[in-house]
Length: 229
Ligand code: ATP
Image (cartoon, rainbow, N blue to C red; front, side, top):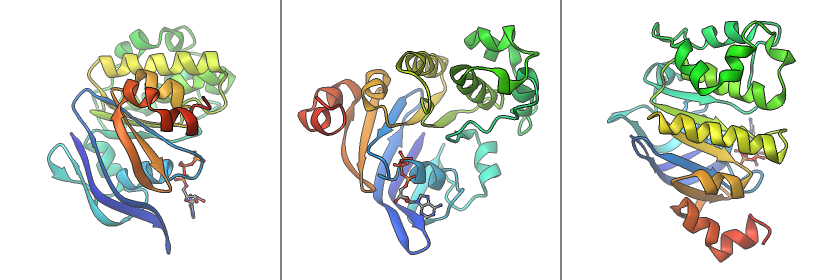
């Protein structure tokens, strides 16, 4: 569904991502883990065309997308939820959800409410009055309103307790189980690997390791470097 071939990207003369090969299959949950500054966010920005790649290709559903504008990438069904959620705080939960449907007319509030019942219960409440975990669910729910084929989530656990992180990642898994593919960037390698079908470990912009989520969680190099074990 999504294929990166030898993707290179960075900022000005700073090259951050080097010759990255990565795939996400239909219905797959793929995690991208690695230390601070490894280039995870930069990879998502390059896929979403928020920054220009310097070389390499990105293919989505059979078409090259690496020369598109960000909104064109979104319109094709590849939706990016950046770190920090970017909700409209004073607007209600439901208004935020409806804004997610602007790229396509087919919004589906019921489907989102089924996945995240709390967003229904709190539909009339201002988004800024939700807890951190609920706000993250709203950011994901808003992205789902445009019926994406693939969601890219950047650190959905930022600022959340381990318990809330678990809840949010369980919700991510539930989203994937509805048939939406997911590319998940997480610093919390342990929890991300436990839900991922496959994962890539990024080190200084290079995919140092890749494999099935649970296998990587058992790999001694990963356990030492990222899981503190
Ligand atoms: P984190 O988990 O800390 O967010 P990350 O793996 O997502 O890390 P990136 O945010 O992709 O890493 O950053 C990779 C490198 O790119 C870092 O050295 C960072 O300083 C640099 N960088 C990130 N954003 C910019 C920018 N807008 N301009 C210049 N350099 C940047």
